[in-house]
Length: 316
Image (cartoon, rainbow, N blue to C red; front, side, top):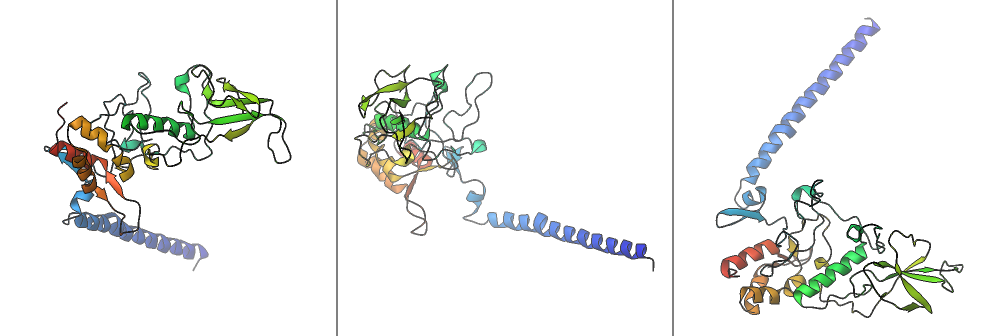
């Protein structure tokens, strides 16, 4: 038999085998498996989860227990009668014409994202033209959020390494350095996160005998030794970490019991009920660790707020 005919026959057999494998896998993975998953999803106890764990109020779908949502007035101002959830990075980009995001408070399921900032993010980028265009570091973001939460809940929102103005307490120390890279005999010290246009006095007057200067927007202070300065605020702040940081997905529907507890007084006052009544609802909606050891105790904010509306409607 000619070599060409042998090769042609082998080629045909191989392609027929590949076609049969394609058809079999298509039937198994493209038809049978999805059908089995669909049937299982219709079983009692699984159907609601398969449909997205949707929650209704007065016959209307108002959200999902799996996706958080903000309880604000649309301008970012928290509604006093509701428990507030944690911050979210999941928001669509601002509209090109108006410059306004369709969901300014985050929690857009189509924009799940993380902040992409870590512990070393401590220096802000101050825009030379517009202070509103400043890019805040993770530290300054946490500082600002902590002050805002503290003011809303009537607790101390100060944190270590934060200025009283709500930015990171960070200095750039300029001068000759020793063999370890540390500045000796500083010649200039700049509070890099305090904008000279909006701040009158730096959080620290002197550092090693050198007067601290306010940062000038657009200036590069990377040549200095960057030094976070710890203040007098306690590490045991009443404002918990989930009140000032977003989750990895940006869609977390839960908050910690600690964050829920500092909101009790505000919600009770707004609704004209007792704090004990509100605490009882918080306790009823607090879930423990999965299987007793996985994760942390948590409170689903949407479920809690819906229960509040049903039991103690807001009369404001």
